[in-house]
Image (cartoon, rainbow, N blue to C red):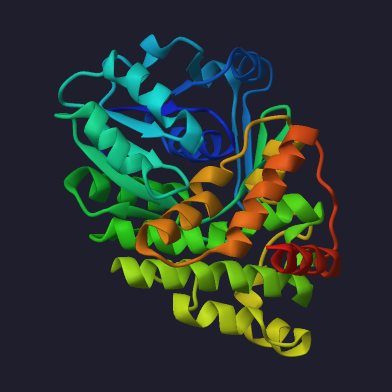
Length: 344
């Protein structure tokens, strides 16, 4: 028996949207997908095949899927799950506003800290529910989407959030509720700072996180973010295990000790990569301004400094301009950052 959410639209049928929406559809919910024309073609030819490193294996055949590249497909829907990149949120909000009915609830399942507030401002009086996705999904091609890491979804504690959480949990995605989604968003952003390092390293996440040199850079980025959030009166929530204030200390541990005490950080497929690495490899635009760039902006606002996040932001933008990862080793990245700090 499914929770009655009415018709659910996935606005942005990328990796997260296809995985979440696909599992809801496999569990019997009425789901439609809005995606690019190539997504429509892929669904029509292959359907959806959803797997995870924890053992999920679901297939939805083409004739069981409703997909379109026309935003009109979301008209009449009761819930819209927004799964687009942060830089696409303003355009998504404009498209949604022109289609949805007054009773429709919009749910943000996006990285970054400003998407739910932006949607709330643009879509009022429609209700907006903030959400956080704590896992990574990669596209293996031909309609196959694989969840490569652990993690959960956290939703704002509202009636629709409660109903959606129950539906997602039953469909195979661990989901819980939280009243303070601003803290949750900042807690997730701390972890998302690693997306940039993974794009610059061009190695799988497990290999990258097992290298102390990379971790030292990540620890510095997170420490900068914690100083800025502390001065701004923001308390990032614990997302993924360790309390935020302990994460830099854990990351700086020697390898032998880190690999013992931080097993959950590397509990993922051996070839898992970050979404930013995936964006770089596929020629998309980066979310860097909404992740590391958000730390730089907050630090500037509250009068602190974030030189490592600033430098990493510039390096990522250079990589995207060059359309390829520089493939920096951890030691090379540390040396480059040290050189930049001496020049400044």
